[in-house]
Amino acid sequence: MKTRNILTLCATIGLLILTPALRLQAEPPSYEAIEQLDKAKHSEHPIEHLEHAKHEIEEAVRLHRWDRAKAIEQVNEAIEAERKGERHRMEEHIERAIHEIKEGKR
Image (cartoon, rainbow, N blue to C red):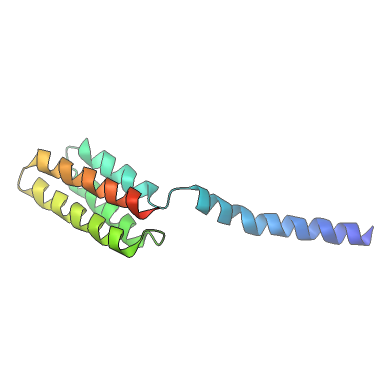
């Protein structure tokens, strides 16, 4: 009986420790960045979303460094294009940033 309680306790502790780690692995590392980039494409004030996406990309530890740098560069270009009133160019840079994020997850 005592051994059974110890095994149950160990199994419970193991689940409590592993469940959050498994959830992190299951979720795309840059889901929030991609979501913010998509919101920027449809927003009247996209710079707020672009800045948020940039922060998420900078914090994405599971993105390869090279792809992260290229994604950040594309977001910076998108911000610059929006400030110049070049909406179409901004959207092109957003699409490139999304592509870099997805490539970096492989």
